[in-house]
Length: 132
Image 1 (cartoon, rainbow, N blue to C red):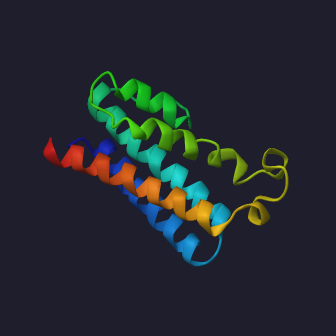
Image 2 (spheres, rainbow, N blue to C red; image 1 turned 90 degrees about the vertical axis):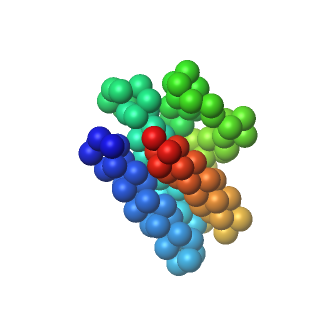
């Protein structure tokens, strides 16, 4: 497997681990942010693998999935899950985007959902790459 694909997966694993640590430490806004980042890194690994080019400079998970759909079967529910994670790239970090301070707006339930979704994307990506 190409080194850049491996690097994206390793980064995804680290960001996923960071999301779990933040969840455990009640840093729910950070858990959500790193969940989105882990998912993005997972999708960019697949993007490189299937499309054989550098992934676009985007944080939009839906756009990455749409590009991947041309080459691999994307589980139907992943579009909805990506839609859930997408905004957390911004609202987990910026008070003006979050309608208040992100660290006060996030709940454990939101963070747990983000971490769970992130895990699903990471495992999906790793399973695809393991088979290839």
